[in-house]
Amino acid sequence: MIYVRAYISVINCILFRQKKQSNFVYFTVGLYYRVISPMRILKIFTLCFIGNVAGGLIFFTLTRHSDIMSPEMFIQLEITIEHKLFAAGFLAILIKGIFANFFINISLVIAMQIDDILAKMFVMMFGVSIFAFMGYEHVVYNSVLFAGGLVYQSDLLAVIPTLINLLGAAIGNYIGGGLIIGLFYAYLNDHHQYDGQRLH
Image (cartoon, rainbow, N blue to C red):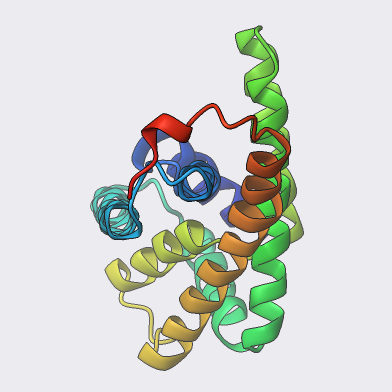
């Protein structure tokens, strides 16, 4: 299961996704300084989510028509989907979602302070590795995982458990990245530098 998580996370990060977890930080900062409207943020988040799912569907469609995924990998995919949907309740998913984006966005904030590109890559890979290997919940990762289950016609996918997982992960990710990191970062760096740009 851990290898499937890492495999999907790396492919997802490199190839298909707008960094929605970073957007939680950036847009919370933007909301704090009132330089972007909530409706515009909602539109961007929606487009990011649709794009992430579409990328996952394309990726898994390509793998299904090749021999990239072995039968053992498909079994691990099924085990991972079952674990995500049925092993934890909403509160547990939400808490693991908080931890996922907390670690990723701590890495992001540290990477923003570093000039060397290789050092930035290492710091970001470290944050992603923590959430991937610890099995924390991430709405983008989970949506791509479920897209894989859809393409491979998994019998485990069910609408209600899937929605519960994605909603819990999304709320947790926003708390961990947007509120704990983004809002705190914006507050500490508020020197009224954006007062002239604020929306009314």
